[in-house]
Image (tube, rainbow, N blue to C red; front, side):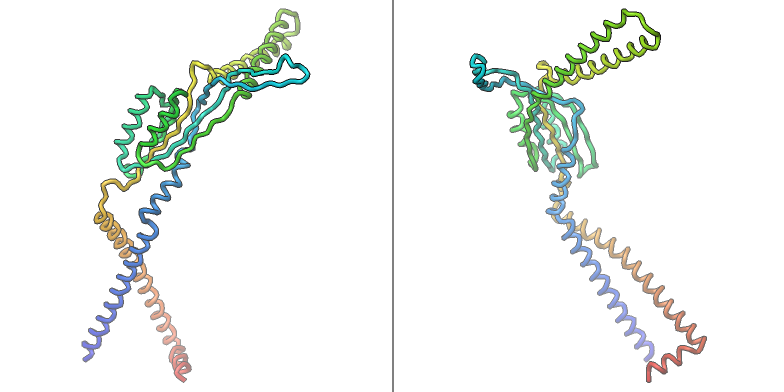
Length: 304
């Protein structure tokens, strides 16, 4: 009779543990579908596009085009009319795309750059298979800018696109003014070299001339970026692997079951261990109370 009672209690206990295990498993499986659904993965990938596309090129690309403006002067009517000038500008196209066929689309991108005779001025590759990223900074002839943008839009699945054009005419003029001023300063300093003076003064003069020449060289590098022979527009292209290539629904479901099962076993065993320790702690506490003859009194008081 006692064996039957113990057997029934063991069966009930086993059923309780099984139900709680299955419930915890389905809870984790549902959580995986809600939190790590394909839509949420796509959204997190889209959020990373802006970060991936925020890289900067060391060398700036500038271009120029003929522009004109109307000059009207009441005091000097002879100066009124249309004036032509070279407008310097910076044009940047930023595009982000995703693809399930990363290697194929990467090859298409490089072939496209080669066909347009553009230059790869910056390249960065990152990530493991399934989550790879490719960032390219491309210098392209201004006349071909719009055409290559249209072609790059066809690569993969376009996620974002932005084109910015910024006038740099004033900046270019300021750089020329600064260089002319520094050249005049250098000429004035050199004119003092033939005059007599103290050794310290001559050394300071030479150091000052070197500083001015260094500043002129730096300005020359910046002005060189505006050189009409090296005119380019910039394209910043980011290609991201979506990570869902060649994955069937069934394989994805099995992967979710495996993940949920591993998680449930791990944390269910942990809960069981905590439960056992808690039961042992209560048992030890009761034994201590019985040893001190406190437990019977508490039990009697509770029953009353």
